[in-house]
Image (cartoon, rainbow, N blue to C red; front, side, top):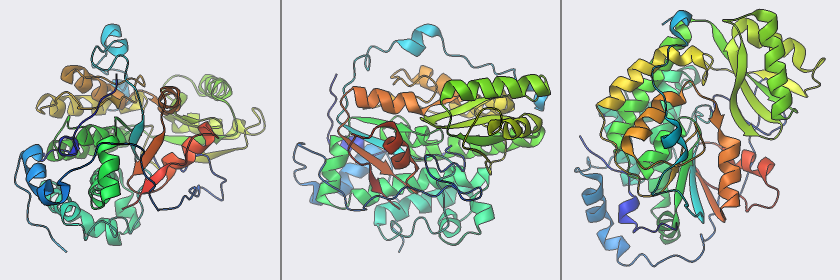
Length: 411
């Protein structure tokens, strides 16, 4: 089902609230994976409806849609880890009447944790609407997020509790930067599906109007704090396995888990692209993966990731109640366009189902490879990556040699 909307309706709302250090699909020197580069110039998104009178009405429309007046612009431990109480029923996970047969032309994709870098925000800070987002974030978070984004220190920006809000706000600031040109407004209007990598799913939901900017930021703040607390409760970690298909990585995880025993086991946490999968688990399990990956399973390399803990596994179980609590207090609306879930690579329109899936997401593998393959199969023509880094562009290049280059909207 093709979905079209006006530019005004695609604004994310204001109301009164992994790639986890992975640089995928790239050659590695030490533990930092360089990013794939693409030209910054945006190309036309294809035939779209004209954005009449956009320039003179944008501010009025934005205020109406966001639902609030903009601020003035400015220059438990591991024993509980398997007790996740949230579940998604089989019926709701596989069936959605509104988005059951969605079609894709233009996708807006948003990065996850690990895409952050000191200096981000420099391009968007002079866009009044983008600056307003950082000002609102300052009120909600209680600290100057833009200052940390621009000047660091990197240790602070890279922390889970700061990087998650930073990427969320910066990515939506990139949308406002894109909106400043006629070509960008046409691309925003043409977007008929959104998705985000792990944390980026919240950004995608805000872009699609399912959550307000403030509510999304409050959830992300809670999410980062809860995931950090879960990581502190039980030593765990992640590693990127390069050069193996997913079945071989699964075998590697099984072998490592058998060697270290229950409680330290590992599993695939991020299905990214062919030859690049992130695994999560106990520290002993991750060490066993690193020991076996090259000599026994012939991986090209295994790279330990600079993250707080074993994201997207049961080690994050203690974070779920906090997420459930904040989600229960949050108004979530039906998205205006499909937003593809990380949990099952499907879009959902029912607000309660979305809440359940978001709580489940932190303990579930990220189905990003399936997400991109599905979008391509459904006719994806134009892809935009909005926010810091070019991680998603690198993944797409590995998944499809024939897909049009991802157009990066940096921040």
